[in-house]
Amino acid sequence: MQYGYTKKVALSFAEATERIKEALASRGFGVLTEIDVTSTLKAKLDIDYDNYLILGACNPTFAYQALQAEKEIGLLLPCNVIVYEKDSEIYVSAILPSAAMSFVQNEQLTSIATDVEQELKASIDSLS
Image 1 (cartoon, rainbow, N blue to C red):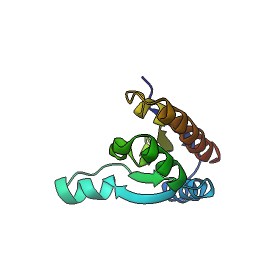
Image 2 (image 1 turned 90 degrees about the horizontal axis):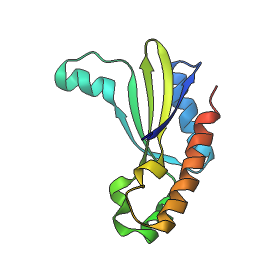
Image 3 (image 1 turned 60 degrees about the horizontal axis):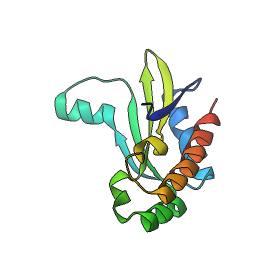
C-alpha cells in the first residue's frame, strides 16, 4: 500500500524546506512541529545522516472536522510532511491521509481525509 506522496525537487534542502512551509501555509496549514532527524541522530547516536526534516502540518479547519467525526483521531494527527536528501537529490513527501485513515471505519472521516490529501498534494505539486 502506498502511504506517501513524493516529489523530487530542483531546490536546495533549505529552499525546499522554506518553500513547502510557504505552500502549506497558503493552503491553511501551520507547522506545529519540526523534527531535525539529522541533528537528533548526530546528538543522540553520533551518526552522520543525510538532511532529513519531519514537519507536523495541521490545518485547523480540517482537524476540527476530523475531531468532530472521531474523537480519538488525534492519535493520527498532525499530517507529516518530510523534506530529505537522498543521493544528493532533494525530495518532499507527505502522508496520504486516505491511507493513514483507511483502517478507521468512519465514512465522514474518509471524506475529510480525501480533502486534506488533495491540499497536501497541491502543496507539494506547487514546488519546482
